Image (cartoon, rainbow, N blue to C red; front, side, top):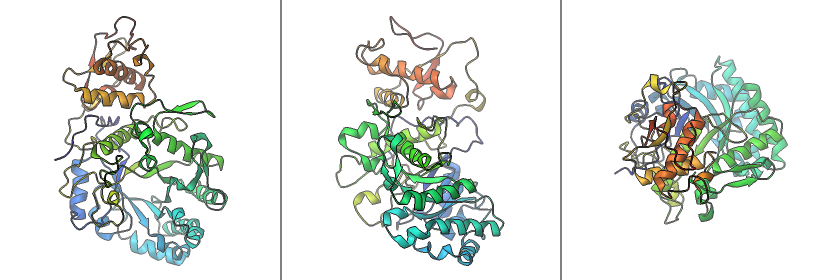
Length: 445
């Protein structure tokens, strides 16, 4: 039975039925119990808001299954294929075999050259990486294909410094020999830099709230004066700082992979609760257009990892337990990406409160304390000032979850633009015309 988590993501663009959500999912196939690609394509199109997938090869069955679905597909060049594809003739043949038969009926958006190549430390693969990206782009152009971008996915292991975020730098040697020419190519072709930030891999009990988007005191970057309240933003800004240091700060970032495992041999980090917290808050966060402190007002295209648990993957237990869905398509946990949930009506969802009429966002009467605590955790990690509900603050009393949630939920609603969908909070909130201010606790309106 799927575990319900009360803090479901608030996707700010759900009010437009034709909106692209920029929420994707990695679709791996290392399992002997997985449904056929055609069923996967139909499920994603009809039952979820996911509008793009990423696969780790060019599986023709998957590419055929996603034809005419409108779902974008990012394909991957295997690591071992990279050296040969630096040759233009080989690259043209690869495009003719793996891309041309399916494009444009299948909406292929990216070709990711390799997967986390730098982690292999294979000098032959690394030296051919950027040349292969260039030849594949040239092969696409020669084939008359202009809508597919060539990129490459990398872990945060490419950084020698990641903390504080403003000091993020690429590993010495690779910065000038690999990443400078790669970023130059990406800028020239309008392609994004694909990165795989995983707060899970930096988890520690002391940093749990910071990693999971829960309420925490934050980590201060003394260089910028910014206090980071979630690890994901810190990781993304570290990558941005590294690209900016090389002179390519304008190259867009795409989140190629991120997620959280539900089981890993008893390790406390892994649970359905933690996975639901992280992925639910993440979807809400990247969809909010808030961006990060160093990249404000951006909505990052993000591919969750992963579609299914893959029971044939080698390695520790965690490797087989990253999935969001069971093979029968029931959610392992709920992060608000299913289409069968009631959504705001388009017209109302696209309008702010009428000028001159004040509205406040408060909890519904039947909202549970668990849902409201989760709302507090999210809002206070999103940049809203939560000091008034802390001990000694003007809104600390009454010292209960409902009162504290009411204040911060309203602060989020007012700061985010006063749209009805800013006061949804997974259906645990409602707008009111009655000012909830009390005593010295004044609610913004």
